[in-house]
Length: 299
Image (cartoon, rainbow, N blue to C red; front, side, top):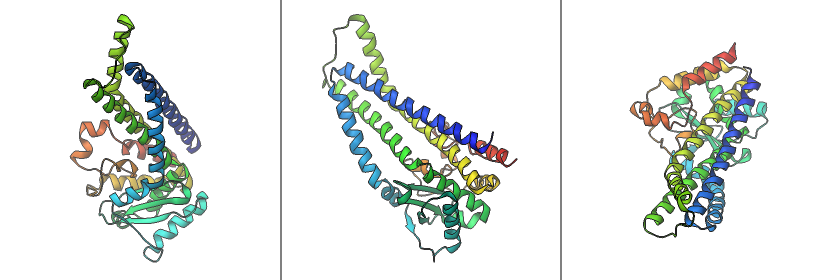
């Protein structure tokens, strides 16, 4: 598999998952409307998604940076880091993003921002201390690829969609148990079966939405790896960086479930990373698989 076919494959799979997401939401909306005999549910969901999208689009980067205690630096603070980012931006045809440092020993990095003109790359102190130049370049190229591929906007969209599904499911289940909605009872046994199916959908919908969201997240990591390899023309650099990040067992103290998907590698270590539930709901593909693919690209 070449770099170009790997990128094309991941783009197709991502949009297939996105299409599945929207079909899932439409089907769920129809079930909600049928179950509660209220067509206003879809209107409410649309208004909620628009408001959430607007808020996330404008403020998500500031919230993420604050949660991770990232501090902006100038070129005089880290000239070598700035030079690497500037050279990669020239090659990729991207504006220079703001650069932030997280004062943590664990090596890791992430990108955020609403678009390429308002983008941010944040790296930990440990990343700068532990990686060689070609390895750091691979990590920075990966994060710039997220910016170039507009992954931050896509991730914001899918997080919002999954959150809305979870919110609506919980909201309508609570109201139903309290008798807050009138149920349909005019369809006989067929209607009863559909009612049971709708209730199961209400319960399982948040889990299904989360799994779809995580699948999209994992595909975008593969895509960013391939894009970074094409940008640097040296897949081995990113592969070596991922190996060092994976073998380092220092936990990232500022990491949380809300922001873990942004990092280049799972920021949780030890039991948090190996627990079966953590693996099931992992935001990242197995790092061994990513390294294996990158090394194949080097051949």
